[in-house]
Image 1 (cartoon, rainbow, N blue to C red):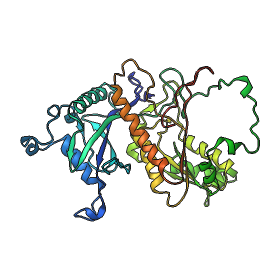
Image 2 (image 1 turned 90 degrees about the horizontal axis):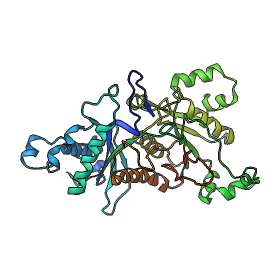
Image 3 (image 1 turned 60 degrees about the vertical axis):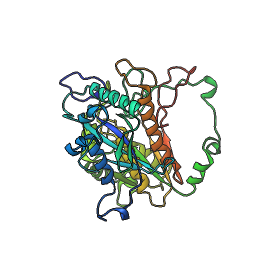
Image 4 (image 1 turned 135 degrees about the horizontal axis):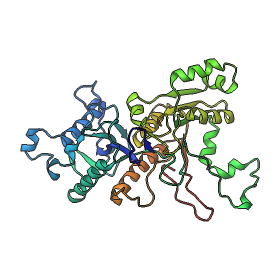
Length: 388
């Protein structure tokens, strides 16, 4: 993925160059425990993070929250002003605490400025060294910083061989000759799918698609220009089966700067294309398209996590099948110039795994994810990309 600033050749980042993600463990804050019943429970955790990253003069004099490297790397991070981009995942640890994910911007970062990821790597290395030497920092209010890691981007086409996702060039599969014309038979699904997924099919589930999405104006124009098109009519018409949930303007502006390195084109209709395929197979199923990728087909860990959490929180009593036609661009082997400590990389992989494990642990929720397109021969099969 290249930065979309064409005036200056920029490095190709694997992650959002202007921010990091904090994973904070904390007790579940319940609405009825707050002094003000109208207050958002997440504010308690946000204020703890603010106090940790930017301690007051009184805190500094008292020696509170200021033990790690004299605030070095913390002073280079700017806590968010609101809880809008904070995500809470109710996965309890042994002490019953859950965790929240919070994207935090680098001081002075401007999405139109340099896309050099070195500043993020520098902060992550310093933070990781502090945590290794001092343990998980106590943020107060029984909250602790569990991990800090890059906001990984979803992959498309760059860094050498294609690895899949929206915008990738299709590659022929290297399939042994004996496998090319195998007839699966009428009962193929019974043998290929787990029984839990076959059972959910009988309940007419809601299908969630995490992908790109056309704007409301583009969707309306498509329907009105082709009112007799059977697929568009039954998906986008007054009683259509498709409902679209658009990302925030801030999220889209962040993701606008990234696209496939050698294959940049506008693809907000990719998610609609996926929905159309599903609709032709299961025409009576509700389709819910969440915009988690930008118009060039690239998303971030936090944009995907937000869409996943929203889909599950908004499902009501519906069974869900969640389609993820993308994967995260976390290197599977050392990369020159990307000098991240292995433990830090493992922490971010664990966080992604925790989020998707929580999702699939919900009753009647299944995630179908792309595994990647890395294989260059039939002799060796690389590991599946995350989240698959």
